[in-house]
Length: 437
Image 1 (cartoon, rainbow, N blue to C red):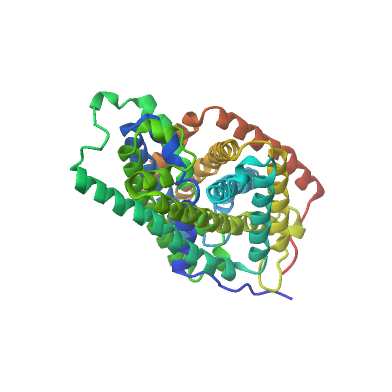
Image 2: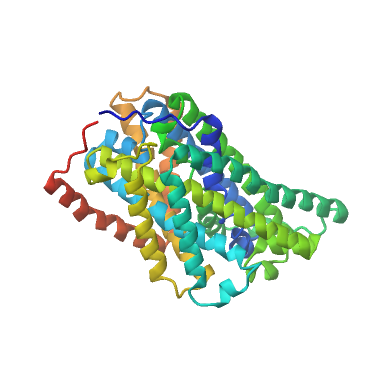
């Protein structure tokens, strides 16, 4: 009997999914990494936001042309065939559950502001991280609507501390007349500094494609997904540029470099200790909300792959609520193994390692999707557009540039990508077919 999946996600839930997945624990930790770059960080943000908007535009047009679920996997398969589609989906899936490990670790690190023993007792942060992961896994197993509703709430809550930081920065500027801002010297802007800063900021902007993945559960996907992708990316990008730049330019660099909670320390410096605790609490909520959105995607990607016949067919089965329970459980098992293998690392070390790896491997999916938009136009499978062609070329060049900037992490991501080749060969060998619906 054919199961009719409910259309659970509307436009605003899709916007919340995009914004919520982009604004997570990463933004609250980035100023410490960006502190050495000064005004180079501002230039890096501008370039990264521009590149992200180009990619978002490409995803919006691809989603309009191919509104079925699966996102990057579907677009690449349509353009370059099943093998390329599998490799992109494989890399994208890995980037999601690796990134989820980073988000969870960052969220728990903010909880250590309230409970310092989390950071001092070996293995405790690992246990709390996994408890959070499996709690959200079970929630997503109950269906996309419950997860989407939680995403709307947590997205609103996570914007509050960012707005508070912005208002505090405005107060500081008003009192000091700008004398506390890091002086601008044009000679300090360097290609190396801007490239390094732009590579770091990309982690915070991963997720612009989020609304394209669960397309099968979106109301009016041809209109909702493109609009939500562009609106969500632009909104998150502007928030990042203004708020993170304010923290970097209004806080002594020596203080930021050694900070485990740069946003909280900024608020503590200018607003007092109690305000620091409040922001730390909201930062934990922000990470929790982002993790919830990405947990939704880590089940939808292997589910879409299984429906397409490139992953084992048992992953294409859904529950009565339309949730891909088996795909969720498999992803969380891999995530658990990854976190457990690195339990001895500090929270900062765990976050940094996972974030860099997830960013680098995501770039392969972005690169192939930008190339897919060009190829699909040339083959007549998408409506030709000069604007889309130009934007897709820029997005392709941007992806190459950021892969170069990621350095060693790009090499590790390439290794993980190559590992998928024998997996694809094995699945083809056994000729797994998706279940009839």
